[in-house]
Image 1 (tube, rainbow over the protein chains, first blue to last red):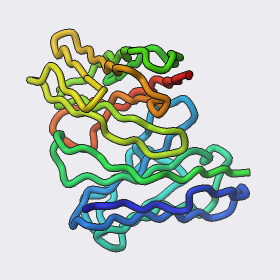
Image 2 (cartoon, chains in turn brown, red):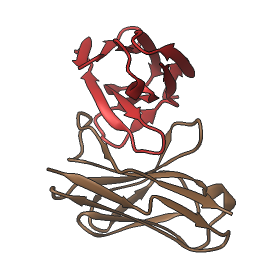
Image 3 (tube, rainbow over the protein chains, first blue to last red):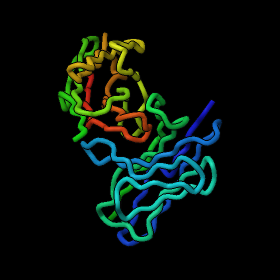
Image 4 (cartoon, rainbow over the protein chains, first blue to last red):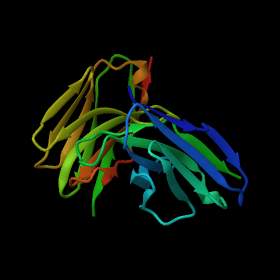
Length: 114
Length: 113
């Protein structure tokens, strides 16, 4: 069966420090991978998606970047965190393109920038 | 503009009671509509997914309905349990592209004993 792992679960980082969140998927190949951010009381906001190794599409211009060095690994990074980067970050995967596929989400990372 | 609006924003009911959550959308072209359950501090978990031709779909005590003409969906929870306390999110897929999802802000449901 397929599983998705996301870590760390919580993170407190000072303003200006770097960030690296990692997400890995097991039990499938060539998944579509996504990074979302969820602000308190708001809907999920798509940050990045990837349909293959090295293929990253950005939905929202911001202080963050994403990389996919391996088929089932998706990394969210920042060189210098801002206070506004605080939020709940979720990684997700789907079997492929096509609107009928559901998403499977990781357990999320609560990031607080202080 | 593609939008998904959910109501109510929050809801408190007693254990054992039924409830219905609403979702209105203005998304075109419409591909499918999904309901997710999100426990506090966790990732969303899919409950149902419905395409244009489907009017209703059940998953245990959860029943989702879809009226594509009025662009409305509802999620009905029967015989609520304490574990149903969570946020319920309506998501509409625009077109055939899997990543063009329009997310509602969710309804926070609290079940009291």
